Length: 303
Ligand code: CP
Ligand code: NVA
Image 1: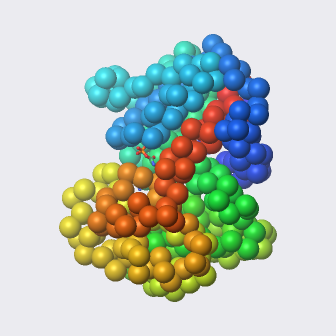
Image 2 (image 1 turned 90 degrees about the horizontal axis):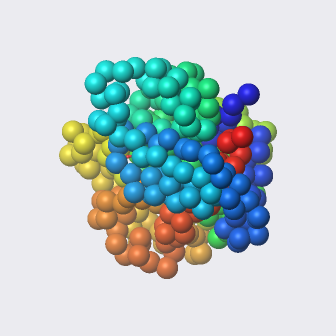
């Protein structure tokens, strides 16, 4: 059976193994290079991308395969061909499809109709590949997850949803501080709590960023206005102003806490220059780890 990665939950049973494989690939200790020789990855991007596009494309090349960048305006999707038919056709040519979509419903439709694995490269509900790279980064900088606490400060968006689930799976304490009305998906919050019970860690949503960062080993933030929400930018900037990750907030966490951001950042809004360029920031390690994490994911799903 094909293995889709639509949610970080799809990697739940071997997330530890995928992180190990990503570490080995990063250290050059895995003789997997060229093992995707002759394989093709189709990448459909409905939204812009720097990291996801380049890391998937470079990753496929490093594994001996090939990646195709497809924009809906060039595909027949732009002229009304259905997602389902596109999925059926692409499945006859390629070995895997990576899709960055506006809607989760479109992601599910593509996955249901593709006979090859589909990897979610971000939609409005989740960003699973990002979270594998993030967990790899935490493991490298903090040695592991047990007894560690991550505080996410800002919008309860796709990244926050996947982090909630990912932290619960690996057993890391997690708290999200979000303004009222911008909390993460309710069903995901309950699912994360259910998983956290089993992995013996905490999973919380609060509205006070200072409460959230107390005792945190990791502070994480993301943009206040995600792709597709541009019309709400002004309203969001007002609502999120007290949620900026700045030096004053970082001082309230553990002395040696690290600061993470999935990038791209809106400097001066959700994070200050001082913090993102400061000694606690690991944002470029995080960006690099997209490459290693996704190579591990590709090796796990492409047969
Ligand atoms: N973090 C992330 O997914 O970046 P891109 O939008 O540049 O792919
Ligand atoms: N939450 C952001 C993440 C970008 C990588 C967005 O969806 O635009």
